[in-house]
Length: 245
Length: 245
Image (tube, rainbow over all chains, first blue to last red):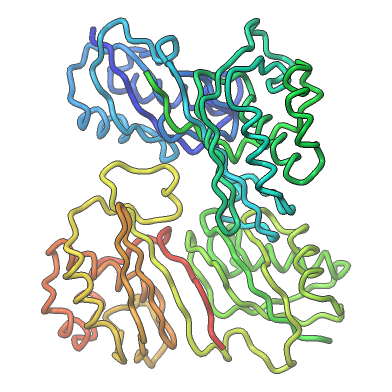
């Protein structure tokens, strides 16, 4: 058996999320179905760098799987994409050492979050950006991002349902670009808790509109209480952009 | 009654086209439904600058309709968008003189056509660009566009089913931009026959790959025979961009 590392892009708008579940279409299920067909019906399990929620997109999700097939990347890409639905695409498949693990070996990730700030809704963006048609003080948003950058206990910035005990993470960089009618946030860090990016965005946008005072961000962090932070920004603006090993 | 001119954007991927038909979801039907609700169930008919096919998008389609309501543009936009599905958005609604006609008064149109040339399919572009992963000689494509610009009988470049008798049209400008993995065609003219933009794109791409000889374009035009030109490029790359009055 050979272990393979795959890079996968998907449009999350038609999925109930990455991970297989009893009801609803999932990315994992579609990829495993396609790989199963390539292996004459023999089931092939895949492991991803992490799950993504319903509506969340991925530009370069990383998976691993084992196969008895020996194929170069281009052949894998052609064969698997020929069996996958149009909203998932395998970009690359490389042979890796048998101990490579897409989830445990990930040393960091980059996420992007796209906010559409135009006053009138745009049908072409409804699945690909969060619509936030409010006046935003971008300088304040950038200041807020500085408070969030670094090593912190992010308990206030993850879903209250998160069962992971250790909630300290390092966000190495948050960059914010504003175009005519868009704000694009880019987050890089060693790991992100459940909903963490979306809660950071929701909170920073609240700072930008004045709903949350900029100066309270440090106390929101130290308060370690989800109810202190802003709303969870919607799924459609979020993209898993890159996974580092 | 007041006549209104509306600007409408729609993502064509979920529609069987613009025009109402017995089966399938249409843009016209959705807008007339929304306007009907605004008028307490009294039917409101709309007239567009022209129809678009299934899968074809519009950034600024123009419609007109008559209403007893007197509202400023922002109020129309808010009210109608609140009743429309997410894949249609009204951008502007202005009172116009009672003899304005969205179709008969149109003096010209701009269409864009987006081609994605990357070798691996992109799930985010599947509904918004035509995938054409072939080596294209862009200089030849540009030369072909020069042959097509101007006043010609476009019989060879419209669906053989077209029943309009006069097939002379003036294409005032074709511009072609190539980015990393995209080619964007912009066509402006006084009018376009059924499928004309898509057949021009299909033919120019065939010139770019060498399937059709550049020098044959003038004789394809003078031959006035649909079978001489290239294939009709797919609907998903086409955008009605602007209508002029």
